[in-house]
Length: 193
Ligand code: C5P
Image 1 (cartoon, rainbow, N blue to C red):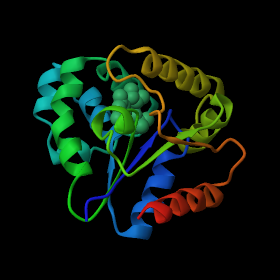
Image 2 (image 1 turned 120 degrees about the vertical axis):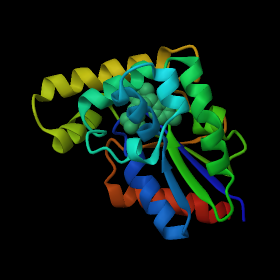
Image 3 (image 1 turned 180 degrees about the horizontal axis):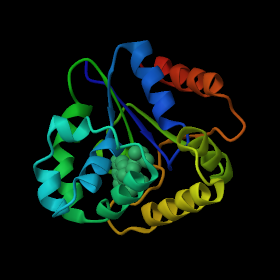
């Protein structure tokens, strides 16, 4: 069975939590596409070469979840050649046998416009920054500024900007607990299987 669930949205909206739960529930494979950009960002050197030569070890680094890695990711993510180098791998993953959940910024718009389910997960910048702060700690104001800066860069880049696909279902998790958000996503997939 080929079945793709595309989950897009800004940083810390809840995409990862929802994606992992949906994948586990239906036995689908899961790809966190942000990790690809983070790995390119932290690798250093020429980002286009880094994207073309990405290895499983690059994706297993333990510094990928830091604020700095997120910033580095969004800086390399504006480079069209970097995006192009990562495209085929993501497309093949999306259409693999057995079902796939991909989360990112451009899954429903660019990577897999034919996805059977498209979800656009959002929440206010304050709520998202608070969630990220619980994860990484440090100065809360700095975390909020980082979230805003990344939103701005991701939404305003020329190539594959962050935006909902026309046929995406919007899910605002500002006032929604993880369990409720997961339940809505699962119901949506169930209805289209
Ligand atoms: O989702 P995550 O916060 O890990 O993504 C890190 C950065 O990678 C994003 O801010 C964005 O710039 C970039 N990204 C992207 N396209 C994707 C996934 C992530 O441009 N599909």
